Image (tube, rainbow, N blue to C red; front, side, top):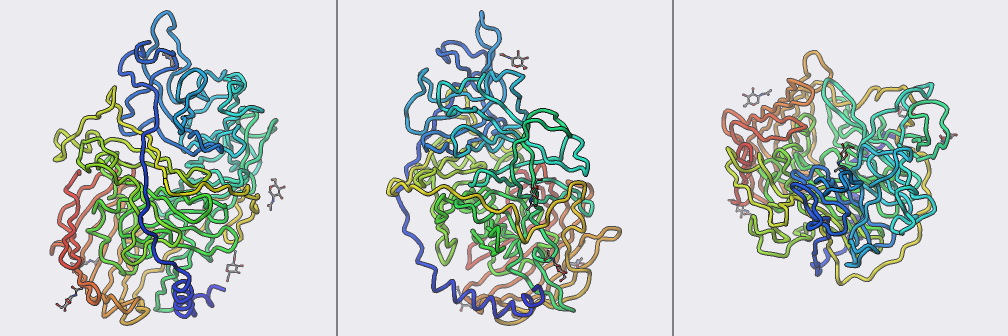
Length: 626
Ligand SMILES: *[C@@H]1O[C@H](CO)[C@@H](O)[C@H](O)[C@H]1NC(C)=O
Ligand SMILES: *[C@@H]1O[C@H](CO)[C@@H](O)[C@H](O)[C@H]1NC(C)=O
Ligand SMILES: *[C@@H]1O[C@H](CO)[C@@H](O)[C@H](O)[C@H]1NC(C)=O
Ligand SMILES: *[C@@H]1O[C@H](CO)[C@@H](O)[C@H](O)[C@H]1NC(C)=O
Ligand SMILES: *[C@@H]1O[C@H](CO)[C@@H](O)[C@H](O)[C@H]1NC(C)=O
């Protein structure tokens, strides 16, 4: 199957373009979007006085860097979202202990109404007795469609027979069960490390990511599995009621997931490869898994969707900027993303379109890490139709209203940075998202960028927003049927096995990559001494064109080193010229562009410059540490 694919890749691709061109409608016109802010508990910087919260239901911290906060999914009624918040501030005497303390999960009203006690939020996990279970992770909170359970971090919060929003759902009625991934053949031990869990819309499966060390660098794989309640486990920890992950599939296979196919001295880019880098969720009807994939165009990180059964891949975004958090609408017709598009942040490296992703064999980590500066994200929420970026259509900015002035606190204040994940309401008329305000050291002090004070009471650094697509008619969609446990293109996970042979890259050598329309690229891949990862890639373009409209000539090379597992150093030389429909250059200073990135800190530090010029428009790299 593989060789057939590669031999006919060209013909298949041409046919595919013809077939989809016929089906792709014109881009939608911009639509009215109304953005409001969702209520949050008051902020306490010292004690949570009765003046701050007369109902005694707690105060939250300021949430600097967004730490301890995250907005999550809607409840099935569409009138609440679930959210992770961090309570702070000692209560007043004579009540020296409060259940509104530390990391918790709350429900927030989205329709302006109040809970019976007069609050617009309700804490679900506050005061849950220790014997009912305690959570230690709270990220990506997501409601089940029964309205009674939540996926929270690596736990299931369960209110038994009661709706989470009801007064009967008390702390005593609430149980918190850990989720365990068995990774030992005999079922012993604490289970494997799971992160970024996402509930499948069938409510019986979920996806997650897990780190691995591969070729001396940090790598991760994504997994799909069924959730199974285990009321009385006999092996493994904890020996208490828990949810087990069964029928686990690694969303990776040697056969279907290589971005480049080697054919003698030919290199063929395989656009149909399912290159799941990081799982981000599922489509609205559950047929697809969404993920950050291997780039289709050089240094242009995008999100993709792969059909869980057939493995058919859709590129959801194409804009040169960086995208990561994504949510597909319940009816599968729309995508909302958090993207750096519009900020110009990544254009210096990705602005020239149509460069095949060859140096990305080594450059992907740096290309994806420059999007942040310390804790600062440069994301804003964008709405894109099912057919994705095309022509001059790059979606619609959701939070476009306001003055756009930094520090204004307006809806489009660029100092308020989008965070993961935006979420669709079940009826497809609303999107919930959240942001945090840039804070030191991403600004202020030695940083050339000034900090802007929060305009919110208590100096709050986080805000949860609700975008309403006011022209849309609410949809009632049927329940999503359970999908198969089997992902035919994945690899069934066997407890105790390691990631195995891992991602295979083209071996060292000199290759030719033919342009689909004209010309060719000569590619030299150099091995990393003492390890199996590629160290350096050099490409020479000669009249190279994939679309017949943009032609590349010139040279680029990229050398990667990893002084430690999380530190990556890039030595990059580039001098590429594009002619045709666009006149563009991508050029480093003569002594190259040299950047180092710690993948967990994301501080941009470079010597030398890399600059892209597109039809006279100049895109510079960010200044160091900004
Ligand atoms: C919050 O919880 C911590 C640890 O559980 C406890 O030490 C502290 O007293 C609590 N604070 C309040 C205000 O209840
Ligand atoms: C799924 O897991 C269950 C329980 O471990 C097992 O009985 C069943 O055979 C598995 N199904 C598949 C398709 O592997
Ligand atoms: C992968 O390809 C090899 C060789 O072509 C074949 O034997 C094997 O069955 C394939 N595996 C899967 C999971 O498709
Ligand atoms: C990359 O290109 C530069 C400039 O032409 C050259 O000095 C350097 O040796 C090249 N490095 C590699 C690894 O090809
Ligand atoms: C690109 O440059 C050529 C030669 O200078 C010029 O004829 C052409 O109009 C330019 N194209 C665009 C899109 O600016």
